[in-house]
Image (cartoon, rainbow, N blue to C red; front, side, top):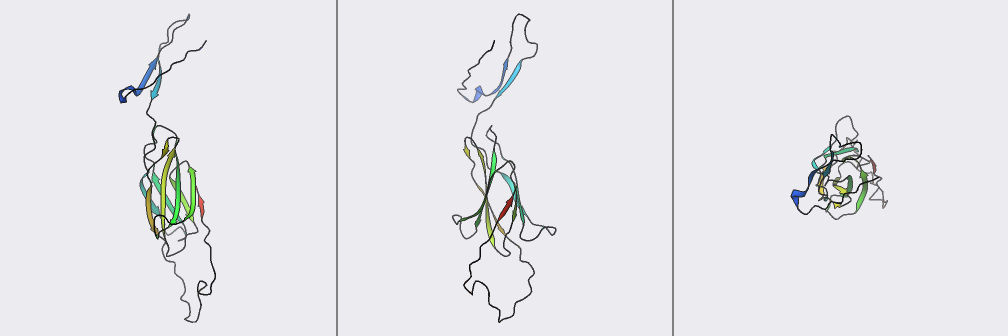
Length: 167
């Protein structure tokens, strides 16, 4: 034996707690079953986002941490994109997707470079508005080079930066 309830909310007042009771040959339920009917929507953006780098961490490492916004009534995950800070539409240097929490450990950042960290929340209804943080990596103490030394970029070498994102 089974029972089916079809319920279609028509307005905001139709959301909330739905109580149900059952009866059979044994008797009536003493406590109702309770179902929470919540509207499903895109998640809200993450909030209180900060970038941390303290003395116990190498300067090439940054911790990006946020508090989650409202999840839209659905399971959500978080995405972080790392871009060059020259402009918002520069190429993506690294991307972390489907993190269960809005906390990201970024490694391999270049000293004295500025980056954009773009954080979004995602659920089955869509993506939140982005939160964009600008972060300049602290300069490390580097011994001064002699005036005769040639920098590798002046020699025509192309260097690649490898980013490792740990969730």
